[in-house]
Image 1 (cartoon, rainbow, N blue to C red):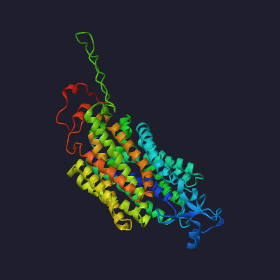
Image 2: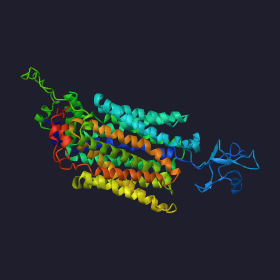
Image 3: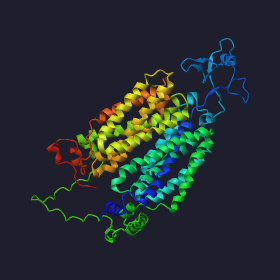
Image 4: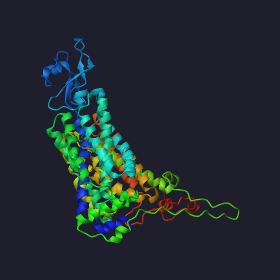
Length: 541
């Protein structure tokens, strides 16, 4: 009997599954805190050049006559320069010279004020976010493989312990280079905690509830996203903020006594009795009786029998063995190649825009904490929208519609006058809502586009393309120093391009999904070229 059949007897989303699901979704909150906290940990702080007359305890505020005599006016920024000062050694010409040290607004401390990440060193500030996203990419590859080999449960707890330890060390980092390394490791652990917990939770949910459970899990990430602003609003020292965002992870260590190993994974490893014990416990909590024949028949898939040697043909040669499918096959065949490159670019654009807009809230004007809170809150209606429409309107309509509408709104934002901050913030938040909906759709859409024999590998490649977008996003936000609307223009243009390209993809709702490479090549086409059909690998792996 198949594992999903047993889950149907057990109840697709019974009391036991709901309990485990809730426990495993809560770590998404701390993962969001770590991913999104860069806006505040490396946030810009008002600063000015330290003047020769300033003492060790110089105050940030100075009278206008002192500023006028000591600092040149920055026409682009509309304020006194924070990177240049007048040369006191040349009282006649008073040329502007670069600052060598700075005085910061004391109301808030960040990594920027501690390590002088301003002016020519401003590019180092977003590097911490890029390190986090690089760590997410590496962690997805590393911990995904480890969880498949050693189990979901030990990898989840190992990642959790590492996340807490490194998170607390980051709060004590004496050098910025060490801080970057630690942020990279934190990014790795978010994959080990969130992704592994997500897989562990979903493997206990029955088929009829997986879409709802999968989308609902993202709401916990959104909750952590919003909590980042609340933490930062009331904890103004960045080291204390880093420690406060890490500390809740200690509570999840108590899960050791409550969260079991995945029964599905146990079956794949031949540990049938342990899997049966987990399912019996679930049945007891759910108040149902599992049929004895169901548990008795719960066996790991039998390996395929070794086929007899192929008979020789008339010339004495054995027929060719079917070639195994591989990820390279998506580039060998034109329809698969076009569709794959299209999907990879969509993942790149979605991740780039999602994180770019999230991290760019500090450049919108107004209250940074309120902007960030709203940026997270708009994700809630986006996910509710997906739950209501994804199985009714189809994946393609929602993906393309969300991206095109969101892109148009973001491009319109670049035309808004700079003094109309409220309108800029409103339009950007509507664009963020749309890109959240498209990002939630592209995952489901992608899994249905690729044939079974390479689906996991293709999904992993798509995720890697997404992380590249996340690594680049913080540097695009630096363009806001040239023109405040430049990042929004880039994000809008990229999203529009990806949304229009997605119109070329076939709809997958209520369609028989492809299993072999041949199915994948013909998917969305009226017919396949008969000259190439015989060359397509059909053996499943």
